[in-house]
Length: 115
Length: 117
Image 1 (cartoon, rainbow over the protein chains, first blue to last red):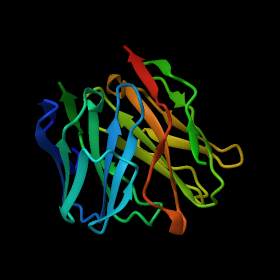
Image 2 (image 1 turned 180 degrees about the horizontal axis):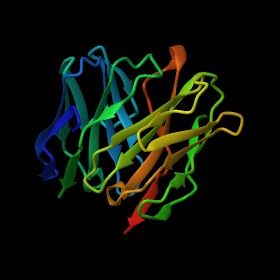
Image 3 (image 1 turned 90 degrees about the vertical axis):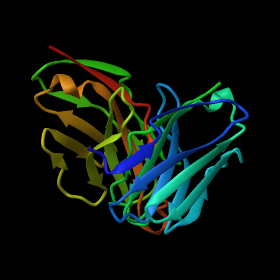
Image 4 (image 1 turned 30 degrees about the vertical axis):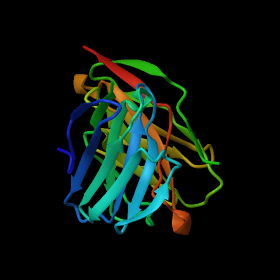
């Protein structure tokens, strides 16, 4: 079983809604990530948090807003999304982004549908 | 720029047989890490195996082994004794090492494996 927990598993939202995806890990990892995955495509990195600070934003539109309240939690706030934002959103964590050996563990993902 | 290439979009294997999934990579870094992940239709990305660029021996994890040929820049995944539960999408991924490491994974396009009973 994965030690990275994502909620909700499925989310359907309208284009004017505000919703959030949540991610939690209790492995003591200090790096957390959001990836976006479209159908039959590989995941693409969106954000990296290192020691609770945003270290990478891969030019993601501002309608996606990440938040890291503490070292165990990572949120992705969603507002005014478009239907093309419908995808699987994967949260991941690793012990330290600076160590190449550190395995990156993923959660089960949140399936987002924007209507 | 870093790049991962998986040339097999789909593969079939008979149950209990071994199968090799191909992965080649391109990087100018001396320090890097290579990962294989399994993704069933449920969506979860499951870590399978890791190989570091300086590791002298090929990585093994249970039925999974990684055939690492550094000079050829290939990191093929070998699954022995295939099981029906192995049917899934498999991704090869690379991460830079050293001080430039951002934690970012670069993924290949994936290979869909179907195990026949």
